[in-house]
Length: 162
Image (cartoon, rainbow, N blue to C red; front, side, top):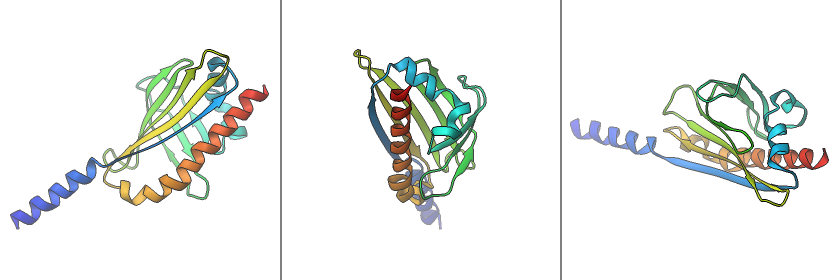
């Protein structure tokens, strides 16, 4: 029995360190300041953002915000992540959990790179960890990735239009 218990514990510990990253990028013909202004105007998300339908709360480091994501062809989810970074014109990052830490964690990051020629490389990524990760793998590889790409394109369209 002790051997079985140890094997189950080792399996659990091994699963809890499983990780997956999704990373997308797009070049936007606008300055980082212009892209940042759109990205951080949370009140306008419902009008343009096909993936993150809403963010409410004050985006300050160590505070919780409320976010609603709706990946294409998948169920939506509302959660309350903690802001890890909010560096004007450069980075916005949060850490969210499904139900409780360790089950399914996601560290979402928006990064703006000034290309020095009036364009910005917008990088959207998320690192996922937790014991439930295998259950979400297909959704992450298809629906979440599609959501990232759709959001990136809409952000580009909006920044280049204004």
